[in-house]
Image 1 (cartoon, helix red, strand yellow):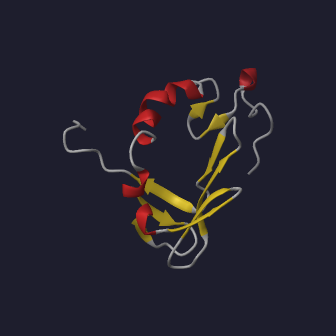
Image 2 (cartoon, helix red, strand yellow; image 1 turned 135 degrees about the vertical axis):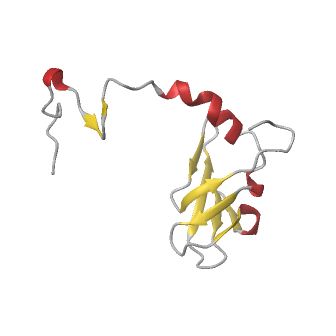
Length: 111
């Protein structure tokens, strides 16, 4: 089923599940939770390869540095897990090759 623009709802609200398009915050609201994720050593993180399903610490992946950035490849199937490209004025992180990334909190941080 395709939902037409405006969702066919009065006032043009689009529906996503049971949530109307107006029931959201902008991405800035994610700054707090994401800052916890992106300030830790991610090589300790566990990730699952989206291609073969292998789940392991990112530290076990194969790193291929080159002039265009970094590639982390799955040691099981050699597909790309992660791309990191530094353009000088920005950094781009592509996690398309992983179906999830899981970080453990340090023991001294309450959950």
